[in-house]
Length: 250
Length: 307
Image 1 (cartoon, rainbow over the protein chains, first blue to last red):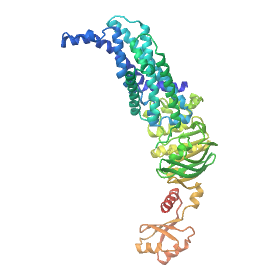
Image 2 (image 1 turned 30 degrees about the horizontal axis):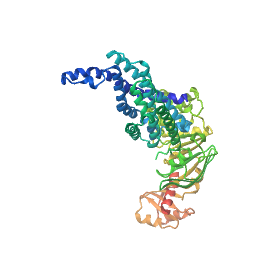
Image 3 (image 1 turned 90 degrees about the horizontal axis):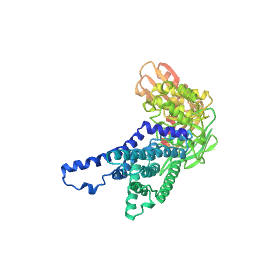
């Protein structure tokens, strides 16, 4: 297993996948407080008297909530695009043929990817949120506790792990990175809108993001358990699908 | 080591293999030849446990490929036609990753020894993405040998290489035989097969056309041909008369160099009599050494006529 983990870490480092994930989250974490800080100045000169203070929460909490919204809208898109080839590309390129012949297990391949990139997408959003918290605190004032921020970051990261499991499953089904990304995004946004429309976020993984955005140090248990079940199911199905694939080059 | 009976593989409505039979004995090099699209790679993939047959039985190392859950259960070394590696790993890291798979451990010294053996000792720390096709093929051979399997299955190991690279790969295959390995390899380069193989199987359009030890195949299966060089040029009328001799099936060549194909039990004195009667001086007369290419083309022609 250590062998497979090492290979995935090398993949992440040498193909800049970790760097891309890092850049995506930290870009938003740094840019959101800056934007909120300079927006009033920009609008003051262009639209004098514009009631921005009434429309936007110009506080540390407001910055972090705005950042969370950006992550849902654009962050998930970028994460999906960055990780869509993780398994789909390997299947398409037949790079798994030699490892399989050498004895790599199907479940080991999935588990290594889940562990390495799951850890990355769990910790990077957390680190970015904490950084954003500190930066927003410096630009505005520290009006929010650190604990809700850590909880929020972990919930957001957990949602990203769910996204990763979808990418792996759809990768085995489509064997095409772009199709994998599109399918994952369709499920991601589709479930979010369905959750909002039917008010069922508490039963969906999107409930994690909703709760994270509140920064209230509460854990949506139902959503967390359901998300964990989906992650396990996706990983299991990805492994089973991998096992049934025909590894012919035709 | 390999026993295949009535192996059939269908891709939707297309039948890639139509009930092939073959047998690979321990310690031999078996050359599996056929045109592009004849079914070589499909057979290889099934033998490597990477694809499932539609029908038939296939025993590899005593294991039924239809009953395995994982390709590694076959304990073979497999080299695909175009081995795909992770371009961001070095040659050493690639073998380390493959060698330490499936709960096995391979020492660094063994990896270095293998890389040295396939002629990649200078590229141990180089990333595979920068390797030439020939280097990748050698790395593929090293990868196939990483767990020291008894049986090696190589799909077109030398076909895409330049003459020097091909020569190197064929020499490696010969060395492997001397080490006691059994090698089943496919190719459409007949001279390669002729150079190293003990037994040859010919697959044409998904069917086995022939399977014999190479010397036997060269001895028995081809009709005799004679290469004749004349002292003076002859006209086409003489050529026509020559082809009318009983037992002569085909005459090709030009006014000085003739190639005469005959029936299996042709009496060569008829040819000499013809030359004497027509006052033709002959510089050289030799029965052509049969080549695998002739056997192969004969099988292809027979198949074409039948279909």
